[in-house]
Image (cartoon, rainbow, N blue to C red; front, top):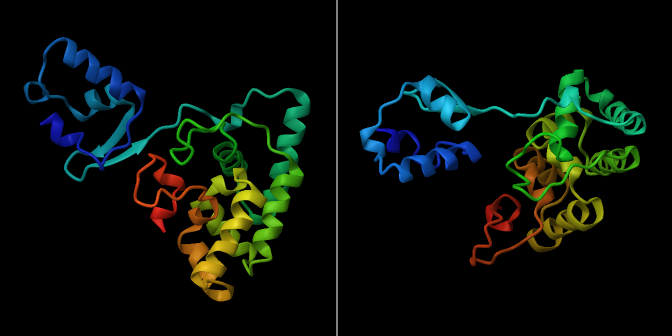
Length: 211
């Protein structure tokens, strides 16, 4: 029964899952021999299930972006970046979460284990926002894009964002209104930085294979 509940791709795992599986293996316990309630499963693998029948799960972040441990100067820099987001009418928690996901303070599956914590700089964040505006994205569009893909603020403007826009235009002929529609539908394309060309490199969240 538990094996069916934990079958991919319906769940996102955290490190607790692997510890739990290791304990079961060490005790020679089969998943078919174990029965858990939804609360039991949640406590073991760090997720909350609203309904076992519908199998809708939500991963809880262990980081509270509003309680970041920053030095005074770092906090000033952080707050200046939140000012860059103020035009989009996010609340304070949403601004913290967007920056947290973009710069490694809040866990994001998009980065995997590659993203180190980095205090963002105003010029970097504002530069990315201004470039996206130059692609005919309105502030309303950017609000939707940032909600869908906050990690864009943590991508390299020159090496990833601008380069990928050029790839879309030169190789796919996507520009203007078509580019705007694509970015609203699939903004993660802005952060692609690898093309496995069919030979998987286990970096699917940032691979052109998803395009």
